[in-house]
Amino acid sequence: MIPPDTHLQIGSLLFEGLDQIDLTGPFEILARIPNSTYRIYAATPDPVRDVRGLRILPDATLAEAPRLDVLHVPGGQGQEALMRDPAVLGWIRQQAAGATHILSVCTGALILGAAGLLVGRRATTYWNAVHLLPFFGAEPVDARVVIDRDGEERSWVFAAGVTAGIDGALQLAAELRGEEAARGIQLGMQYAPEPPFDSGTPRTAPPAIVEATRARAADLTARREATARAIAAELGIRTPEPVPAR
Amino acid sequence: MIPPDTHLQIGSLLFEGLDQIDLTGPFEILARIPNSTYRIYAATPDPVRDVRGLRILPDATLAEAPRLDVLHVPGGQGQEALMRDPAVLGWIRQQAAGATHILSVCTGALILGAAGLLVGRRATTYWNAVHLLPFFGAEPVDARVVIDRDGEERSWVFAAGVTAGIDGALQLAAELRGEEAARGIQLGMQYAPEPPFDSGTPRTAPPAIVEATRARAADLTARREATARAIAAELGIRTPEPVPAR
Image 1 (cartoon, rainbow over the protein chains, first blue to last red):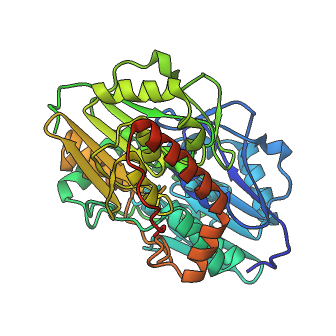
Image 2: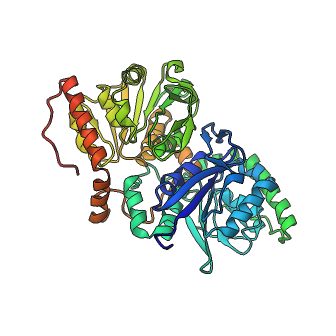
Image 3: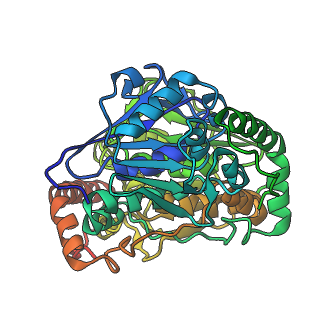
């Protein structure tokens, strides 16, 4: 927990083709952290379009961001382009170096990987991308939220796919401001989920649905793997044997 | 379930001061309903600011909306102003009359109430507003998602507060396109929630946190009740005795 009288600068990265709830799920929590300033940052001031067309406006550009205490990196298909964007990767590296807490959601973890920030870390990401983590030197952990710490200095909160960002952000809220503050935010957003079906993971969903989802994403998954291999080579990480996606 | 070859027009209402996840939670699902067009509608084409400052752009204005099959009404503090906005209430009434499915999230139910659409219905809303439902002629039901049907003609899906919109939208997806489609969407968004605390309802949160939350919202709750009483009078609903908030 950070001293309550320390004002926190919290920032989310917004980029074209993100999966909007990777941002807007944590938004609901990050925007309510006591004694903090929360802003959404993007490369330009223009509206950004999520993978399904939701248009969100950033609050400021990357260049305008102060040193952030908390950096939030969402994922989504647009992560592919970002993994080849030296300006954004440089910004992430610089902000992560100054931050005490980093939250990645879904394939946001792959962006951190492309920035060289996952080497030696325990991490997680979207279920259909978790086999790519070793290309970035990370050890995949089978959990909805994984917290990896650089001693006392810095904590990395990795949330699995998409809606896992809500659970990850609540854990982050507790890390930042204590459990009572996090519980208050949870009550305010009436977060007592009751999914009508038990199909949120490849272990629980009917196998035919899992296979259909994998098949639909096959091209994207192949592109992600090609990018991951290229980055592994650049980072000097011994390319792991292909692991079958779980 | 609607015949799979029937193309669906799905629309969400966007308004100033909404609670963004009332919109963006269901967005994740509504934007993935097979054979449908999904758009976000607002009074003007300008960006709309959520209660904590997230700026979202609508896809089109209310006047440009076609007859919708599915109407989604989010909530949030901005619902107060909308309850006194005859143009928006008229639009909601007209769209609801033509729709087969209406989804309300959080205090979106109060907006439907102000439009006179809750009389005689079983409904739910945000936990700290559920005592206001009788002012609109509705019977409050203590459930996260309540489905009320006009025979075969029309279904009303009421989701409780804020994040309940995700559960409500998944139930709606199953109503529209069957359980398999809904399960596929659930897997895609890895919706297997694991809240780190059990504080999402006033029954499970520590009493001190519940009281603090109520106290912080006391002015808003009082304004909402005054508006509800005035609308009850206009609708000719016998004003119920004040019920203590649960």
